[in-house]
Amino acid sequence: MIRILLTAACLIQLASAQLPLAKLESAVESGEFKKISSVVVLRHGKPVYEHYFEGDASTLRDTRSATKTITSALVGIAIRERKLSLDSRIFALLPSRAARVQNPDPRKARIAVEDFLTMSSCLECDDWNDASRGNEERMYIVEDWAQFILDLPVRGRMRLGEKRVPPPHGRDFSYCTGGVFVLSEALAAATRARTDRYAKDKLFAPLAIGEAEWVFSPLDVPQTGGGLRLSTLSLARIAQLYLNGGEWNGVRILDRSWVEASTTPHARIDDQREYGYLWWLVPWRSGGKTFASYCMMGNGGNKVCAIPSLDAVAAITSTNYNTRGMHEQTDRILTEFIIPALAR
Image (cartoon, rainbow, N blue to C red):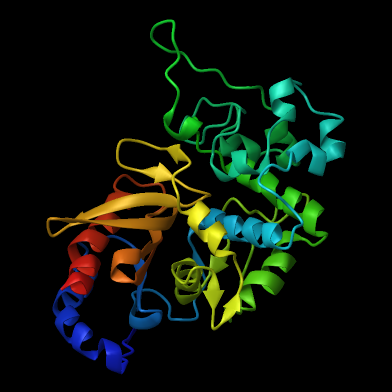
């Protein structure tokens, strides 16, 4: 199903954009791109392009770790309400867990909310390393996920030479889904509301996001590290909220300072990408130009990216889970089709 919405401001722009986006549809339908389920583009805050290769506009999409960025927004709301701070210590919020933690270490006692927001806690947790003690696949086979993460030992790092080179932005990045899950319990302790209910009242309702389907841990804690199902347009609205500086229809949901801090580098992932507060900071190269962006990303190649210089949001959902090239193909959709269409 395809639905194209035109506004007067976007009419001329979309007329020139149709050719590359029509080529995208042909490329997906011919099998050049695998298991792409939907593409939605917002321009100047308005939906200007929607195409659903699977399901329709109401279909809830499992974008896996894109959920993490929504968790960051909830932390920002709790900070705005003065119920939480970046410096809030996790064990101070969850004292019952501190009392029985394994591998005690003074450094663990200092773990703060900001450490989990930036994937830079001291815990030995790395989802990109199958041998890591804290790899998320090991978490899922136990009942108490938060205790599993907090019980982990402190990680170490080998280095060449006697001197340690400080990491960019002062933080060592280590991708850890379990740490973001712990934020679910921290949020509930700070706000006195279960995280899914807090999200519904404080974020989804103001954005007119209706249906949402959460994954829950064996102890019935909402999984803030992944698996939340939302429609593609709902996902795009989350990114648009940040592009709006934290406002929606004249209502302030997030402080502008939180939006700016969230999309500022706090840790370096690799030579090309940096990390904000559970936002991926990615420069897209297209047509000989570089377009800075901040993105929600998840397994399968799912991407929801805000591109400030184009005043645009692109949401691409995919069910191409755990396959080689899953992210590369949605990178191509952005750089070869969507950005050229908008940058004309």
